[in-house]
Length: 396
Ligand SMILES: *Cc1c(COP(=O)(O)O)cnc(C)c1O
Image 1: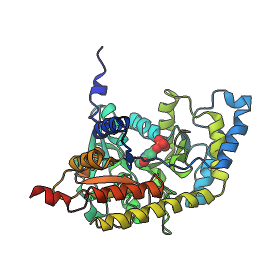
Image 2 (image 1 turned 180 degrees about the vertical axis):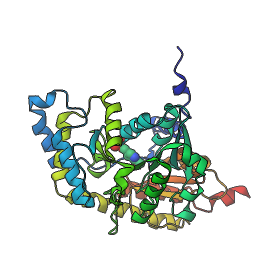
Image 3 (image 1 turned 90 degrees about the horizontal axis):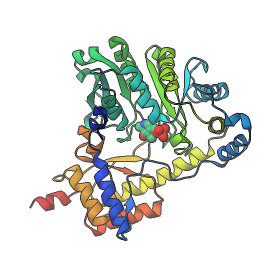
Image 4 (image 1 turned 90 degrees about the vertical axis):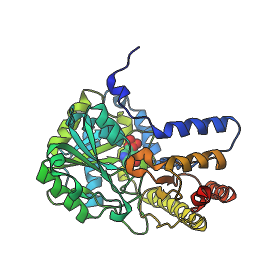
């Protein structure tokens, strides 16, 4: 059976090999610690689960939901944005539901990228920006995120010829995988850039509430005039521990929202109404559990910083996300280091190059396991001499 060219065009998934090896080690009876998970380990808050129980009993909710979301969900989403970011969003024309952020990214690309079109994306990045661009027949243009520029892209480095050709650009702050954050001033520059070249700018704000030490992440919609050229993707996955529920929403430029909704209405039939009602309960509930989870991530982050320092790493505690983006020991490639971690210490960490070419030289560590389990991982690293200097020893 012959598959479509677009399927064959998807680049090999660097993490797939490691995943297979990890499964084999587990099967052979080894205790593998997975520090590669990018999903909350805590359950969905009680009041959201309760709202779902109630909603599922109502026969009206068993029917097809309306395209683009129920009016109640869209209104609650717009109000949440108003309260959180002090931005005015029209629930009728400037909001559309998403079956998670991932789906939103894919379908936005389907709506804006044709064969040969350019999508300007960060590198490293959440892999969907790249793969969906390739599925659409488009060409990703990578903006390298480097420590010299605090993992923000240098917009001046984008050639004018590329910018003139591009239809779409993605940004994502707080960032996966680097944990970097962006200021409103940076977003202002990005909006000006998008306006200059008439590029739809999509900001993926998946980690808006996962912030620490008093830091609050801005929405790109806080930039004056952002609605002229921007769309922003939100998801309840990380904020409300709802990864399995598949619920998110897009806000911003009415035309972009309409185009995204048009593509979607031809592909999916929106989010189960009962899940949308649970989403409303999430928006309207208090923030206690968000604080609770952020405190858990802070404890884990601080433990990781302390232990990694002992092993020779120089680390700056991230202000947001449940990731840490760390250099691999000099002398080893990302894949060499991650393969050794798995084979010798039975610890899974994804190699940086799985997120784009500029991720080479890094690995991502996530904070999605209990502190005790993370402590065990660092003990193992110590026992197996996984220090920042290990690569040098190997070269000799
Ligand atoms: C987790 C994540 C998403 C979306 O997750 P969904 O569960 O599909 O909502 C989108 N972007 C980034 C950068 C993420 O890390």
